[in-house]
Every structure is written in C-alpha cells, then in structure tokens.
Length: 250
Image (cartoon, rainbow, N blue to C red; front, side, top):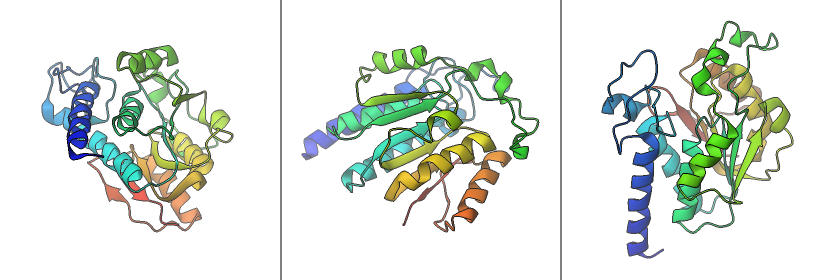
C-alpha cells in the first residue's frame, strides 16, 4: 500500500472509530451508574453504556482490536475476524471497516449473538449462579437493528456473516475454517467457555484471542479453566482495566 493510501486508511479508521464509540459527538451514557453527562475518560475505558453509539467497549479496546486486525492483514495471518457477543455491532462494524480500508477481500467478519440478550444462568455452569445480565433489556439488540447499523456505515455486504442464536447451538458447526482474530464478549462463564471450546482450535498460529470481560470473575474463571485444560501458556496481555488478549503460538 502506498504511503498516501495508508494515510487515507488511517484517517478513515480514526473517524469510523470515533463515530462507533461516540466520542465524535459526545454521546451521553444510558446506564444506572454514570449519570447523564458524557465523560471522555469513562468512554475511553468503556466504563459506561452509550445512548446511541454502536459499541460500549471504549476507545482503548477498539484501538487494540484495530491493532490486532491490522497485524493479521500486514503479517498475512490466515483467517476471518470473529466476535461472539456483538451488542449493537460496533466492534464488528469496525472489523469490516478495517478490511475495507485495506482492500482485503478474502476475509469475512462473523457476528455471533443471540440478538435477544444473555441467557439466564444454567445449573451446568455454577460460576454463573446469581447472574442477572439476562434481565438487562439494554443488552437485547435485534439482528435487524445490528444490520441497520452496518448499513448506515455502508458496510453491510456478503463479507458479513451473522450467526444468530445461543452459542451452544451456533458455534460448534459455524462455517468458519480459520480465524485470525477472535474476540469474545459474552460476559458469563457459559458464553466464554462455549466460544473457546468451539472456536479456539480454528485460530491460526499467530492469531489473536481477545477476552473483553476478563474483569468479571465468571469470565476469568472460564478462561483459566480452558487455558489450564489445553496447556496454554501464552501470556495474558492487559488492554485496559477490563480486557486481556493473547496470541496463539501453536
């Protein structure tokens, strides 16, 4: 890519990120703990739930996602980009925008979600006992709304694949051969372990695995159990106060 083209791609992605996160227009929060005033620091760290913006993961986690996607492109790490738990679709829209910015036509973006919120706790996963996220209506975003968000950015096409349903039903047989970037945002032990069990073996050597909710005890427990079971020793690299990632080395 020419230096001038790289500059244009960088400017486009900076603007796309600002729009998706809500920093472009100072989008106020819509949660029960942040008050009603936009706070740039809280938004950078993903500590609030935006009113209108398409992602709640904040600037730091979006920058990390971009960095890992760009590395996959520049280093020719084979595979698609996948997110499990997409909310309004912001991170997936960003991944599609990154592919578009660099003229990547051979990869797809997979958006896996129930599109009706989180599941109630299952007795099979004791770590999730008492979890109340399934009662948060703000987390239930329909597929139609996510598709419309992609459309508004001009990024809804056949390179975007929706996996609609509970992870236990959609992920084991998902039509994915290889993964370059796998981003997990399922909050719970159940959602996290099911995504890892179904998809980790498809992550290419050199590919990245991002855990958005590592701060949450149940999510961290699922990650620890999976890594211990499979002898994964690659270091967990902090992104911000919430999330971590590691690179698959074998």
